Length: 78
Image (cartoon, rainbow, N blue to C red; front, side):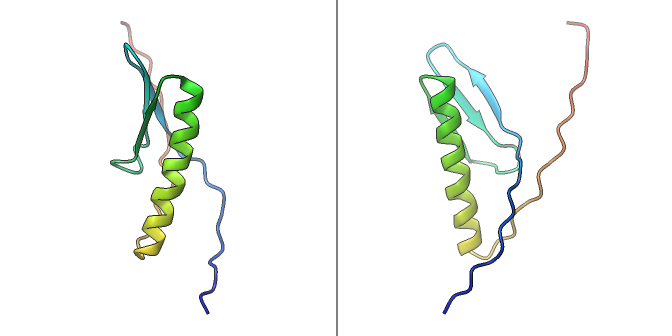
């Protein structure tokens, strides 16, 4: 019988870009995990689903789940 490991809610940074015709998102802590849709809301929902599936796949392969990276902002003259 497979025991279920304890899971903790984590907050990961995602970046959302607004293109000419759609929105896209990616998570720097999970290279290759991306989502795109016509609206920002839909993109967020798809990104959450993509991250959940990506993390589940990592667990099934015995890979460790990364800790969330710290996000920093810098101010520059532009």
